Amino acid sequence: MSYDGSGSGNDAWRSGGGVQPHAFDPLTQPELFRGVLTRRVFAFLIDLVVLTVPVVLGYLFIAVFGVITLGLGWMLFWLAWPATVVWAIVYYGASIGGPYSATLGMRVMDLELRTWYGAPGYFVLGAMHAVLFWVSISFLTPLVLLVGLFNGRRRLLHDIVLGTVVINSSVRTQIAQPARTF
Image (cartoon, rainbow, N blue to C red; front, side):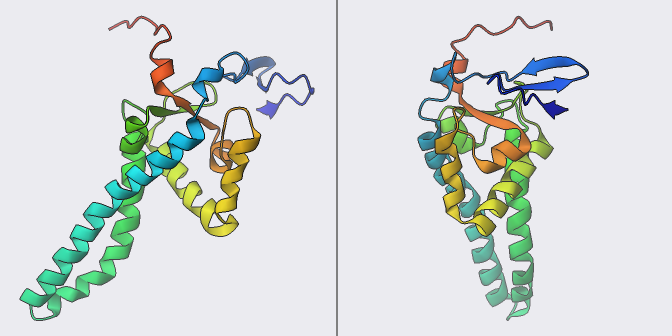
């Protein structure tokens, strides 16, 4: 696939001679992107709490277990950091790959993640979304989040790299859904 660099502003992708437009256009559907960046910040904070509570409980368990076993249980502390990373990747992968294409924080804030062509998220996409977010923030500082202020779809750097877009799901549910065939 290659980008349609014609300068026509249609933001389309060429595939096999045909042109596939983006599923969500900020010019014709501005309500899908209204307030998305602010909602994403609050969704992130909610997800941070969801991720932190089990990690803190795990550390407390290891501490108490270490006291009970006279220090032997404290050897489990070396597993805590890798377990935290695995937990975060599984959380994002499973929730974005789930039926709502959103984490718990995103669901509370009426957001959902979609691919640029409109398909829902899947496990690997959700896991990579989390990994690229943390890598971009770690290496490029939080100022990388300013990218969202300068594009119509309010996409952040990791969204652009992965080809995803975050939209208001409350607006999307008002749009007529296709009939189900099952």
